[in-house]
Image (tube, rainbow, N blue to C red; front, top):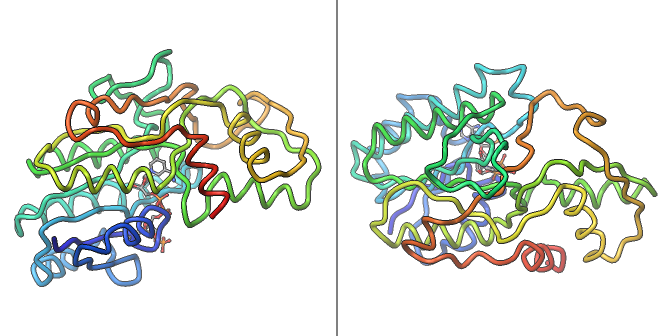
Length: 275
Ligand SMILES: NC(=O)c1ccc[n+]([C@@H]2O[C@H](COP(=O)([O-])OP(=O)(O)OC[C@H]3O[C@@H](n4cnc5c(N)ncnc54)[C@H](OP(=O)(O)O)[C@@H]3O)[C@@H](O)[C@H]2O)c1
């Protein structure tokens, strides 16, 4: 399949490239194609004529977005709209990657795909608006929500390991719960979906749940590092963007369609640290 990958240099983009070797991939990033440029996207897609787009490009700076709403909107909403319109014209199917931050985190059980959204941050809101435009423009879409992503790039795991080089003690939030997810598990789910005609909205995270504090403890356990970690509350560690307190996602639609091959989060993190 001829697949256009946007954000190919990002964490997920790199893993999609690694797993997509059997396909004809066309790779783009900000330098080669600004997804917010409507004309450039239309011309590029007309020329390339992809059969599918895996849309990994996004404005992912959650705190930065609070002060740069237009910037986040431009990439997450206008960018998604441009790609969806290009897909409509060229007949391509589209994977739009979204986030657990579309939910407010007040539900005590895991969120399913059709639970009520209520984003609490600019990032979450723009990703939701992007979802909605994709749904309206294009029938042949897969909207795939993930969470707490790590892969080849900047992420929580790398930050923790870097901080441990210079600190004996770290303070990590213990009252936000979610599921750390490896780009390896997510990319596998994306390719399984692309191989099917099961269009729609999906959750794709690893299995299980933990707080950021528990996540940090597991990272250091797996990496064999001795660091004292102090659990703190969100109030003690204020950030510009509000985060959901409980944003565990249930991969219900994956189980109901192509099958859910995601691993327990501890297993995926073990492989990542080894790598
Ligand atoms: N990271 C997480 O924890 C997380 C959690 C839930 C969902 N997600 C979603 O998962 C997807 C992949 O995230 P990720 O962690 O792989 O993100 P990432 O590493 O930040 O990569 C995003 C890529 O998009 C590119 N980009 C930004 N603006 C662009 C533009 N206008 N035109 C073209 N490319 C542009 C970036 O290029 P530059 O680096 O040059 O700006 C970067 O290569 C995103 O949709 C994100 O919203 C991520």
